[in-house]
Length: 336
Ligand code: FES
Ligand code: CO
Image 1 (cartoon, protein in one colour):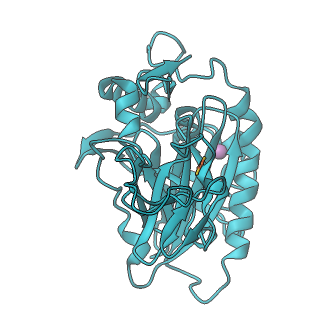
Image 2 (tube, rainbow, N blue to C red):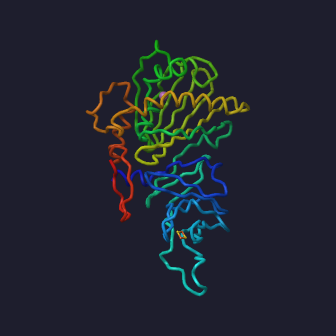
Image 3 (cartoon, rainbow, N blue to C red):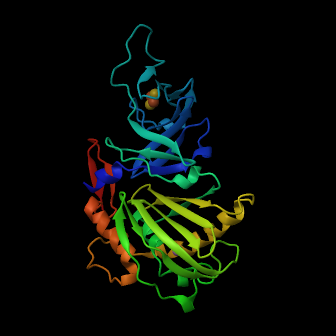
């Protein structure tokens, strides 16, 4: 059940600009995947040639088809093999000569892969295409941790004053006011949470910022940060790809409606700093799999959002962020 849910979610695998004429190998939920681009768009297959098991990502794209590097079988973007050079002319290509096709989309400046038969809808992130907003892509950040631990760190308010002391928080303003979490429009959303921030986005303009957090799916969350008396809005979307049971890759979309004529780099560098401040903590957390049994760790009222996240994962049957892999029979199994 759990593996099916994540199996049917969209996972960000690389920046769209990184997928050029050569196919590329990526990993999703322990699955080796090849992505490639042709005139029709972007495509994802299991990274395995049915002939002798070579990685299709070692091949190339020719006339829109993915050509295996080993014996040059040519697969069209629907996965059907169209050409087998070793086959004498007149002989039919075996029907079984196919690649396993996955869903693949170019969206929000990223390439997303979905392994499932019943794909969930792509997340909605309207700010990306809204006039007056500008988005910078941060990452990918490599993290040796499970996606739910990474998402939970992003949702955690009461660490800001310590891990990000002097930037996103101040030790003398560590109290977290009570806030609400509700489920609306298929996502969890909080009321505004005020946090005193000495340097909220790298511009050293301190003050109280109001955070509104949203959890869009088990591996995607966002917050929008505003300041009283200002129209400025900063939204950060975090999308995590669980590559295998040890490794995840995190992408962040940083969208702002101010300093539109300024370069993105200082904002990205600031976000890099913040992310690396969290990294050791997240990678140190035990157990590696987020405990969904609420008795397992100790909670405070200020943890209301992360408690809601754990409950929601539980309801969705994302048991504890374990990762499915496929056994030889193609049946999904969970590796602990
Ligand atoms: Fe791919 Fe032979 S292994 S063509
Ligand atoms: Co942090």
